[in-house]
Length: 481
Ligand SMILES: [Ca+2]
Ligand SMILES: [Ca+2]
Ligand SMILES: [Ca+2]
Ligand SMILES: [Ca+2]
Image (cartoon, rainbow, N blue to C red; front, side):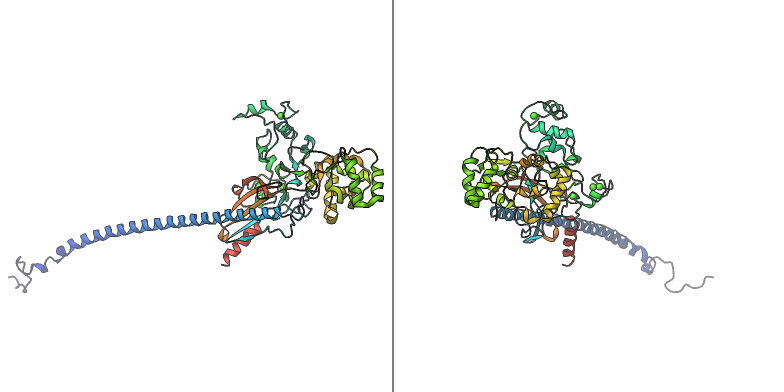
């Protein structure tokens, strides 16, 4: 006997079918909605990824755009700085003398959201530039082109005396600029250059830029730029760490730059008096024109004494030699120095400004050499008021050592007419660094009466040249925003 089934528990199919299979009825739609959910999730995930991707690339784009804006601001600041320098050089208080370095606006000058700097050289405008160029912070100002050796007028011996120079390169420089094709011993003419790949010819004409040196046989990057790879005249960290980072430097705590630091092609002075007339050429017009000038400046008695001392020999190889022989005082000489000359060409090319040249450059000048170069530099540092004409060098050389004076005289001046404005700038927030170098010539004027720009070179690719301090100041200004 079977116990009676409780109501509703019978297996009869017709009875309460819903209670027997609730699961199959509900499972089918739940599987479906799970798949839908997963698909939706995937789509959502995909959309989010795409959104994130675009957001990121927008951000990058925004950043890049922002940097482009900053670079454009820096470029404009450089043009602004160039206009400022042009103005200063147009309105020099004394033609032939550099602008006053103490009032020149050369460091972290604001132009809108941008700032510019004029990269100068250590103490040079102030009469310094010692042999130990060990400064790690840049000096700001203009660079005097007359403080350098002129590649077009320096003799082979003068070139050979430059730091890092090889006798072969010095000879090749002579061959590059001379019009003939006779090979100077160790030098290079057409046959050397035609063997190169690609082949080219020896120029046989004057240098038009310093960078042209890269074409001259034997000029490698080490000789040209030495340790100063960013060409700022300053010892940067990577230039004093040996081989840890380029360049391969000697880690001696001082900058050993290449020859481009010391040479120019632009230095020349007008051979005219301040009123624009030609200077009195002592050998030709001296006997006729100098006596009235001496009379006007110093009176009859003094003038006659000077003329007696000069005697009948009016041939001088330099005004410095004239000074030594005439018995003029340094003050007297300064008063007439710009009125007299020993050549009759319209320009005096390539004389070195003894007031601003570095010891390395002075060392190259005949009759000076290493010892006298150091003595000249230290004399001008301690006697800044005496530098009004070349007469002061006789206080360093023995005035009776006519040999040294005769040799050095033709190469020395105290005037400068060409200046480099090496301008670096950043845009807003210190971004968008740019650097362009200009060479300006005050002996050649534009229609507007402004100094002519002889050369323009973008140096942005050399990287940061303003040193650690400027970078830290910019970062600090950014933090304090
Ligand atoms: Ca030649
Ligand atoms: Ca450097
Ligand atoms: Ca290094
Ligand atoms: Ca070094």
